[in-house]
Image (cartoon, rainbow, N blue to C red; front, side):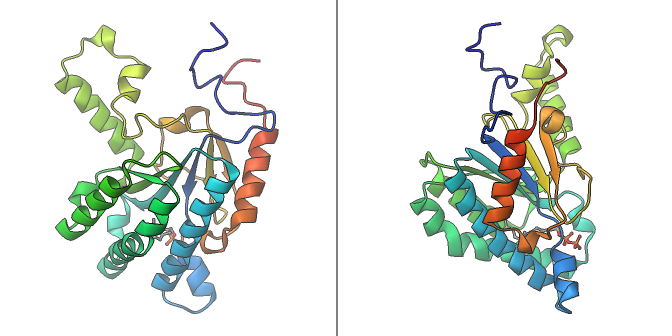
Length: 243
Ligand code: FPP
């Protein structure tokens, strides 16, 4: 194989490198709030401020792509009031931050089955994606109504719909039909709040990602925590099954 290969195996990792693509399971908003005797929505609001800080820090650190798990396909099981609050917060965030994101040259992608949200929110999301579509800086992806198994199932359905023969189905055929197509390979997946699970996030993409679990609750996550994670990534040796 040529050393100029674009394979994920050659891309971004180890030896002090900055990860090209970082994903985060933003966990612990509820516990952050309950420790302060506050309602859960207060934790989500504080989580929104952590989103803002993390996007800024990712740009500063030279990370190319940042993917955030904001609403899972399982989050519908939460009380209707909390689901409504989360949707409201997302609309508020888009309205408040869009100018700043644009000024910072951030491009927005959405992954998951987000078109099933209420029509107003879908419209706001589409407008935000369109407004930021010409930007060439940080590639921000927000996972909304996202489940990793669902994403793989939809990719398999697309393969059938495209009429591929069995012999034509390989990893590239699947990757080209995942919601994350076009993004750099995932290098580092962070989960906050001390839980050590993937919870159906980026199951395919995490195959060779470095995993980092921190006890910090998401609303407390700041620039120093992201920098620590990037440094830890740079110290890991990535072998992709080799020696
Ligand atoms: C998990 O914490 C967090 C969520 C389900 C929602 C994440 C949402 C935000 C960070 C705010 C808005 C997002 C954007 C992109 C503007 P949890 O509620 O499960 O916490 P717990 O495990 O402590 O109960």
